[in-house]
Amino acid sequence: MKSEPVITTATATAIVTALIALLVALGLPISDELQVAILGVVAALAPLAVILSRGKVVPSANVVESVKGTTVIAGEASELATGTPVREAGDLYDDYTDPEAETSHEQTHRADG
Image (tube, rainbow, N blue to C red; front, side):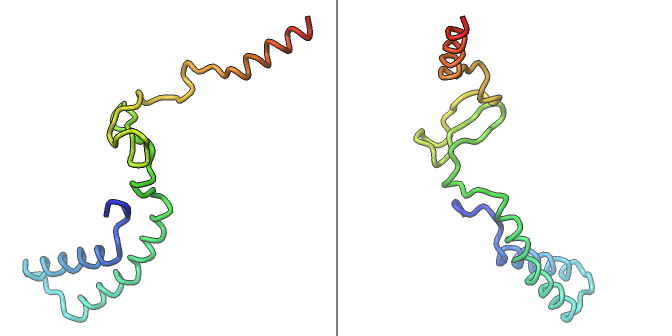
């Protein structure tokens, strides 16, 4: 699951099946019909959950940077080794000056002056 961080329909069904088996083993009276109905609902809803959540995640192989604590670290898509500290987390533009903006500002003042 390295490149697919979303739970799959098969995984969801397997988890629910295991939970039903556990509840039956603990003595909860779940009929065969109810077990089939529960698994049917899971089989119908799990793909929807996967579809909705897939758009909210990025496969690990496409991650350039991520934040761990207060440090930005290199991801799998970075030129750096995965996990290499890159910088402290915060605004990318802290202490940044755009050289083109400075040049444009200086030229404007010279023309006025």
